[in-house]
Image (cartoon, rainbow, N blue to C red; front, top):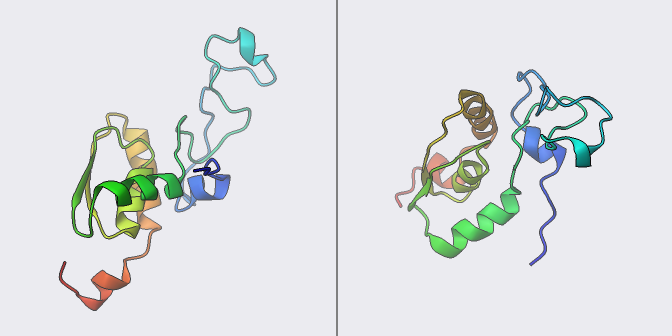
Length: 126
């Protein structure tokens, strides 16, 4: 299976009110990555600055393999919320944990951008 990395529009959907930020503010713009001990920073600010945003398509595939409609999916490291977004799209409940409050805010913004499913709008039972 080949799934491209998450696009910038996918990463930042729902984050219109979020202030862009550098992933690693200590990194100097244009510094060579190989000699930088913290080689993970973007050279421009981003609204979703989580370092490992997964593609929604990939997480949707994994969730579909291991759960059914209405199941609860646990993500102990929710990060920027990709698993939660995929769960909401697939009519799964989810529980997520994240220690970094900035990432919680990113995940919440992304979740708010996902429309309610047709199933929940129609009031269908699971």
